[in-house]
Image (cartoon, rainbow, N blue to C red):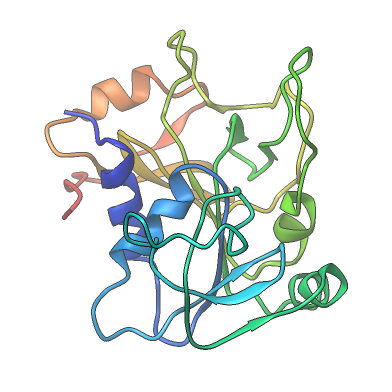
Length: 218
């Protein structure tokens, strides 16, 4: 069976390391905050001006002034700080973010990503995505393997407007964990119960398959 959104987020949380500064994009990536391993010191940054994001507020205790970049209400933790956009993007553009987790409409086997616009649909803007993919030390995409019509999101070339090129390092989808290598997509893990054949069928570019592919440990 394929993973749900929480399963994707839980697997991505295994990529976190102690001391990381992490920016979580809108959608599935925000769920990663729920699965930070106990005892691990990870600082979450939001490009709208908050460093040190805490857990989502309990029902009835939300502060409408405390939001992340996706307009979700959040909480702060001891040591949290607030700042303006110029300082926020100085952090991002200065290479101080260790890991960025983004959603995507399309990702190529060269690490290109389209994540901010579908032509003909209203959008609020690209947000900080272009800065994040250009400056973050590591970029992981959280996505479903195919779109709602069953078309591959992992492709040889993006057909939608690009967010960045040659920047994505790894993809965690509902079907697989895939690394971007010099040879293209490399299959590292498969979701529990999902076959290699299904992943190959639903990927729009060749997959490097080296030996037996283990199941994810969720």
